[in-house]
Image (cartoon, rainbow, N blue to C red; front, top):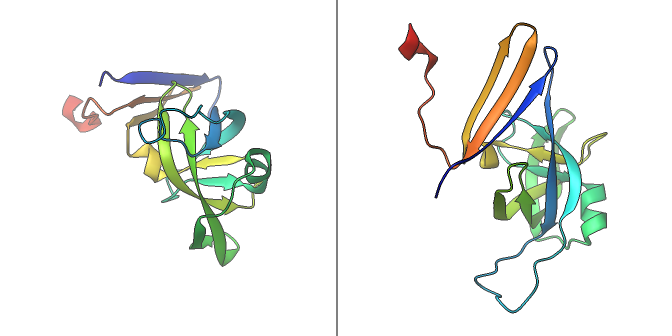
Length: 152
């Protein structure tokens, strides 16, 4: 598969990486070729390298009419809790669809999707800062070994 890149440039140093993404109920066209793909709905997403698994807000659950798959123990800033899990498809800003992704429901404000390491490790991911600007770049699938020490 050819790598599909995406990048965002911010005009200052940033405290978080926020992009658009789309989410739908889980769907596998190979398993159900006669059914239409569920509708994708657009949401704001934060990219979090400290999160092992991606999460969705209660608003996403409601808007998509999702049914829980099970429960997972989640460690977060408020402590530990049991949260509903769901299977969803996530459409990244570069048009790549991550299918049948197990996500947890989470309390979020201003953001509806948390993109964790389960998605980030599928791609090349880079964050650079230069001349007061910040650039976030990624591509799926991974195609290169980014190692800044090679240039020293």
